[in-house]
Image (cartoon, rainbow, N blue to C red; front, side, top):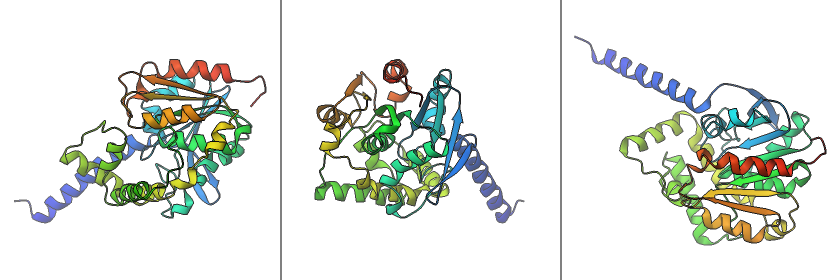
Length: 297
């Protein structure tokens, strides 16, 4: 007869083995690291040609957002493709101080370009990555050939009590390992059952991301871009978003206020599926090609 202790050890070993496999699926192959003002940032660098930096969304990793969707393999046929795990995510450091996020997430892009000695690049951001990209365009337009602010937009300067309370509720949800409010805001494109919610909670807790994601949300006002900055924009900017995305109104607001902006709406796509849509790359790549200057980046 097997004792309770042996059963407990077997169960623990099984759970740990499952987590190791899941962690591998989330993080993907290990690349390189650089120091961004004291925060260690993980990045990959593949392919040759004009550079493009891919910036992932909240709670994601570069591997899940860009490699598993097939975008890296398609891009690197023609471009030098650079991805990073945003601070607070993946293999990068995960500070718990909200002051370490906000504008610092955009500055990580500038520091990465400096580290790689790249003067100018295309930047493609998805969801939170789109917000980071928008901030980067506003603060470092001289470093950008073109920018894609996908599955994202501009919410305007609306620091209402309701918005502040909602953001804090989202942050507290992350601390508990819950993402229901986030999914609702993005259009409710996923309905998680009990086992899936438990799995999310386990992953966030064991990966160390529950508190760092809360800090990301609390630091997001530092990524705000003003209407004046949007209207003064000189960089070619494209937004690709699904018509079922909960952020569609933000994308439309961005289009209404930003100079040199193009909006493409994908029929039938939601917040999670636009990046894998058949028409995503065919819409994005001609825009990038048309925006590439003769000046070497």
